[in-house]
Image 1 (tube, rainbow, N blue to C red):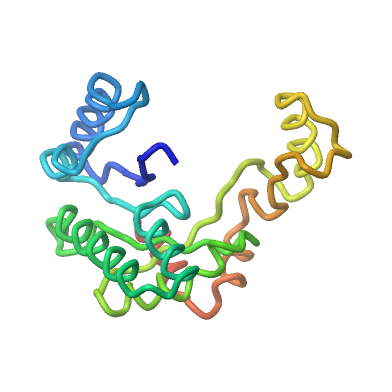
Image 2 (cartoon, helix red, strand yellow):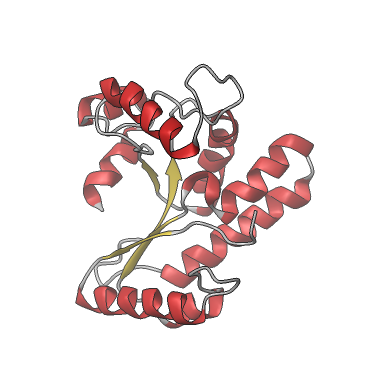
Length: 197
């Protein structure tokens, strides 16, 4: 909503760690609108040694794909493809020839994410970009949902019986590997890529 997108960056090696520190510092020193952020040119300058993952619903890919899903306008699909190609080119491959950009899938009962997952899978296949699955995690175990919900109410000054308050899905906890394998049994390579990364 504020013009910025999410992008997960992981350091693959020492050069990546140094670049990640440069990006982080630059984001805080030169970010726009009083929020730490960076632009495409900065990422292109310091992208070596990093692994990038598009960043679920907060990503530029997801933004365009949600618009495509809602309107059917091919222009939004084309913008998403353009973004994916830029990321693939910017992060390239490592010394071993392994790709350093991955398209992220989540299945945690969030309707917009569920709606764009088929488009993300299609894009990954068409552009030869590997998929990776993960799960948004706001609490550690499934049974921690109620505690998390209560803490959120306290922080927002809301009551739990307020139907109009923000409520997080129950599925956003740290899922064990066997649960993730079951959730993505149709895409075992996406689960394998979490280990690969």
